[in-house]
Length: 271
Image (tube, rainbow, N blue to C red; front, side, top):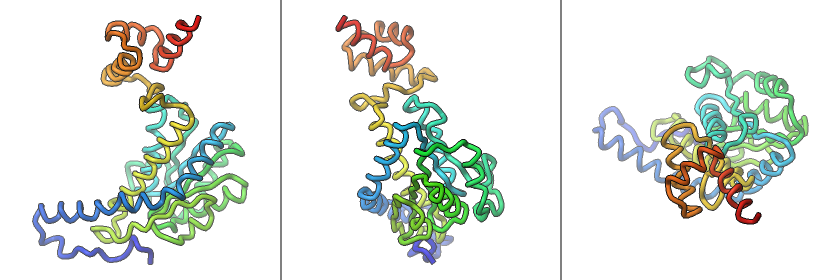
């Protein structure tokens, strides 16, 4: 039995007040940042490998089931609007397919061939990096897919919440955390899920920064899809160029992105 399945230190939950429940969950959550910090040395080579792979035409592909799969899909879906990258660069695959994002699909995580079959349909590139996400570190769907990918000479990584797991054994770059028992015994969507989300935030953001998708601390390649993002882009331009809001608005309308504005202004200033 993995640490994530151990009995909670909190009991008689049904008899606790709302305040006691919330304080208990928060007490458990406060352990997570330190746990995640401990996995940074293992995360560094995984990030660097993904950056190298993408620079050579590869992709980042997350594989997961249940809550872990949903977190991978979420992280992948956020990359294009945040960093302006194509949707083909980062993928999130979940056991049971897209229906499993919203609904539980029975026995999907036990299907040993589904993940590899899906990967093969994606026209695999030699520089693709496959990252399995699993709280237990034993999910059959994830383990089998990573094992197939590794046998195919693809780079593999994993984000798991138990130590010395079977999935870590088939990952070139395992990121292992001992998140321990949950507040609600076995409910890994809670502490383990929060830890996984933090690691995914660190991983994808670091990858995109190292790919040149950020200037200073600004998301200059973000897709301007609504008024809020348009206002943010205008603020960026005002801060970076010291121009007025009116000029920034005009430039953004002309060039369509913060990066394009900055690059054209730089070209004009040197011509």
